[in-house]
Image (cartoon, rainbow over all chains, first blue to last red):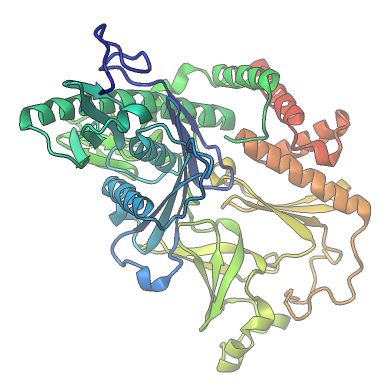
Amino acid sequence: MTTEYVSPEGLRLDGRRPHEMRHMHAVVGVVPSADGSALFHMGNTKVMAVVYGPHEVSNRTHQLHDRALVRCEYSMATFSTGERRRRGKTDRRSTELSLVIGQTMEAAIMTHLLPRTQIDIYVQVLQADGGTRAACINAASIALADAGIPMRDLVVSCAAGYLNSTPLLDLNYQEDSGGGPDLVVGYFPKLEKLSLLQMDSKVPIETFEKVLELATEGAKAVATFMREKLLENTKTLASARGHLKL
Amino acid sequence: MSGPHLDADHELRIAKAQRLLRDAAGGMHSRAFVNVGDVIPVDHEAGYLRGHGTQPVKEELLATVCGVVERVNKLVSVRPLRARYNAETGDVVVGRVTEVGGNRWKVDVNSRKDAELLLAAVNLPGGIQRRRTAIDELNMRDLYVENDLISAEVQSLHQDGSLHLHTRSLKYGKLRNGQLVRVAPYLIKRLKQHFHQLKDLGVDLILGCNGFIWISAASPGNKDNLPGSVATSASAVVGESPLQFEVRERICRLANSVRVLGALGLLISPDSIMQTYEASLLWEVPVKDMLSADFYVKLAEKEAEQRMKR
């Protein structure tokens, strides 16, 4: 028997409509010792990102003379999944995700303005309920903006899938394990360009286009939310300090 | 902004105080704030100059950082709030030596790169003026070693973002008998004076433009006519008596005042530090409780109240 992911009434397992996202929540600047940090929730998926830098390159052999070195480390907390399990930072999944997130962020950062420096991004999943990849990119993006690192545009990310012949936005864990295609986009909302597109299954081209469009729309919604949060944070910081002239 | 852990009641009060602060700042500059990727309105006909924090995309000027738009004549730039220290020549900074080598020290000043302090840019012990020899290079560790804290002045900035420091004055040099507090550099305003002596407290204060703040016991020989004495690692703490408890407590109280101000994102100046210090005494807050949620919220409310009056 196959699970019914979309009921005849058009509702998903957690009661959302197919085009509905989960509730988002973001906190900027959660780690005082870091240059930038953020907490990003997408429904039950919770991710924390911390940015250090730009600072002196720690290993001089890795120094790049014309741009910044961007390092990214992804990890999952022991308590992040239903089953408690110690996870290394070196397993295949983490290594791949570190690379994917790092490359997406590097594409956004104006690295050529910061030669011979290093930027460290640490993302940790505190609670995993599907769409961790997207949540990590969103959290890292806010943290980078908080750290005042120049970026071409905010990178926002959203996942979408295709189950029961319906394109579904922002899959949760249950839907993620449904075996259908799962697509993640990294998107520059202002430049209207994609910086990341990942899908590990075969899908007819018509379906793919529908799912891609849905994911992009989702990303735009994330962008609106993130902008609002960042602007609010900037205003709070500036008004607390007082004098606008720095 | 990140302070202590707040419960629901404190959460409400801090939100209210922040709202008041924002009201006090007024709506005068609501347009001055931009996010990454926002369009900055510019006068295309009159022309403009593109400054830091901006990029041109398809006839439009976009911001590349979150912050405040600044316009000076035709120059349009965006200044990020919470960013690393952006040095300017003449700034007083406090830094930590990270490396000794060749004829220079490397100093961490919270900038994008470590600053360099050349051997030729320091005063030699005894204040002798002469060329630095190979012997001086070998004896560099007598002056500063790794992890020493020093105060210095920014001598020059370079194209690639690196900077040079100098300590060619008696007021600069190695720091001891005190406490370092780190805050975000945007909270410190550039003033005429960055060295302060809080006379009645017996405490010296250095507000580094890079957000490093040094609070120490007043140096005993603070007479102006010391014959070129430079504090060195070798001569450190020889025959110095331990500080009195009262002085140490005052240093801690001042340091915690700075920490709270930093956590609240309030401007840090000698005045604001002293006000916080006095408030903590007035409310009879023990030093150890100054970083608690209660003091944090009360201080925010006090500041909001003051600003509303103005």
